[in-house]
Amino acid sequence: MRRYGKHTDEDDIRTRPGRRNTRPRTNIRPKHEDAAEGLVLTVDRGRLTCLVEDRVVMAMKARELGRKAAVVGDRVALVGDLSGRKDTLARIVRIAERTSVLRRTADDDDPYERVVVANADQLAVVTALADPEPRPRLIDRCLVAAYAGGLDPLLVLTKSDLAPPDKLLELYGHLDIPYVVTSREELQNGTAVARVREQLDGKITAFVGHSGVGKTTLVNALVPQEQRRTTGHVNAVTGRGRHTTTSALALPLAGSDGWVIDTPGIRSFGLNHVDPSRVIHAFPDLEPGTEGCPRACSHDEPDCALDAWVAEGHADPARLYSLRRLLATRERKEGD
Image (cartoon, rainbow, N blue to C red; front, side):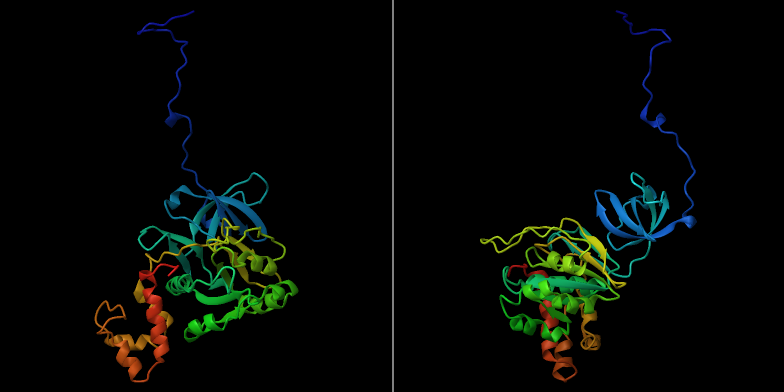
């Protein structure tokens, strides 16, 4: 057995190269001006599935993008292998400016915001009228996030065969939000699907809702070629469902240029990232009345000019009540 001392002069000893010397460095990079445009369909552990023309391409984010992450709905520029063949990987080198962003935080005290969907035209808030019971505070929070992110809201009420929609519709009537009421029988025979499609044609629509409300069942009915698992059930004790969708996914609406984005079921919707001053933009009939408000007015304090504006007959008092209810959602938990 050969032994080497501390100071050997043998020249046949193998030295392990350092890590910095194992990868050859190069300054050659694909030309960004040659990048192809694509749409992010889904994101899974750092791998992004993108649609490039008519091909589905797997990609990863380029290092030069830094901490900026692409999300479902993003329009991106890709370089590299764009063939879409198995085991090929492209690289995302640019993320286009977003027209809208749906964000949420884990709770109202969490400073870290999560971008759920980009570039959606509207947000379909799906809620069951029973089994599980409606959670108006959670609906309010989704509406605030939609208004703050530049999305038009749409209410989709399911399971009307179990409970009437009148009470819930009365609560949101003064917000002038379009809505569709569906039953389980109507979903099966297709009549409800046709009514929902009328609100989706030509638009990119993100679907949100807490677990068990039938959101993924509705998405499967709208996009029958892409069946997502719907085996979740509602817990008899908590009244909450089990998540059946684990990642957001963009799906083309059959026979239309619209898109449906199915998102994971939510149990909370934090609004720490929302600037309350942006919510007033969703109330164009009230917005002119804020000109006389004191600086940094919360629109729910004694000096708020909106009280006088409404008292003078410029807007419906119920609209001011709705605005203040939405603004107060950050002070209340969803289950209240």
